[in-house]
Length: 179
Image 1 (cartoon, rainbow, N blue to C red):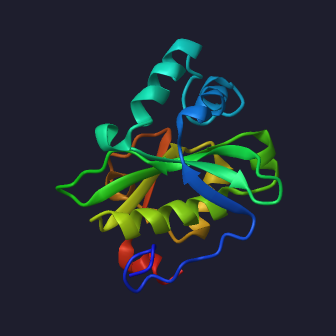
Image 2: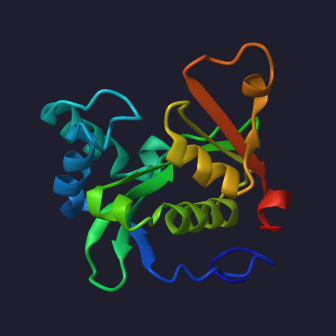
């Protein structure tokens, strides 16, 4: 079996690579979560103290249910952001994914490659059928990204109970293999 799972060919992300979050990544993690520009479409920026506490909680994925990866620019080796998943819903076989890139990563449009790599890893490593993402309706860049990756309106978003300020999109394993 390859690192991407049975029958899943590895995709080559030509400009980025992912590596697991480690203790030396605290400064990057905190800089992303405390930066008002980076957090503009996510939530209010965290305080430095809360960012440090959160970093230590997600540093050990076996304890937190998180899978956090550093996004590295291949050409320079520079760490440009984070992507990964949050605690999964094992009963429903679903997993929430997310991404935060610094200004350099956003300006070079690395989001699609990073999200593709993390979804490939999630489907290969975990017993899930669906990945989903949520973002603010005002974030047109996120909407273009996730629509372009084939994600469809999910669950309550497609129905009448959708939150007016959030969009929730998802894609199932069988559809992901088709993109």
